[in-house]
Length: 269
Image 1 (tube, one colour):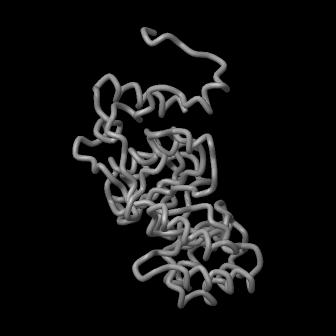
Image 2: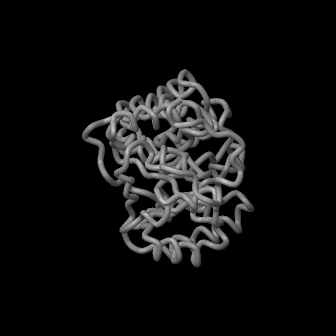
């Protein structure tokens, strides 16, 4: 949190959006995907997310193998041509269970499968999945520390790296992972399911990093996120538009958030 706040202050002092502070040539928009979709509700939720501007969707699986496979098939049917379908198992399986799942959904063409096994499972287990399936593997929200990310990148099992600015590293750590991931030919797709400030920071960091990564956007109701204008209703045709105001673009806490404030410092400090 302190790291994100400091970067916001640096960008404000420079009078530029955070993304432009990190990279003067940063894009004004980033590709995004709708997240937090339970696979059982996918056909309806995908339609609603599409109406809100999304063109890629991630569903949560790991609730029962047969049920997962059937519901994932219905989710795939709900996607239109060219709309990626992603899946997140949240560390639900061991390696054998994950291999069985991957074999049964091979024809669906998942864009990635996130955390099919424990994040700290031995690299040999991750390597088994990589060798057995063409589905890209994703992870990183439960990795902490640059050495651990460097080891994961070097191991080669993760095609998609997903550090979370609010869980570890802030802008500094996330940026370092992004650079190393892109240099190694991997995708940097920041993980984030939380409030508006963290989502805005993730978007600016992704814009500055470049590459072909996607911004994770939880589509479940969340007043801690939705009350911030810098992230609300800013998706169109699958892309999120960054605020063009200095820093993260948050001038005042929204009324919904301000009532929880416990301390404030005067601006001259």
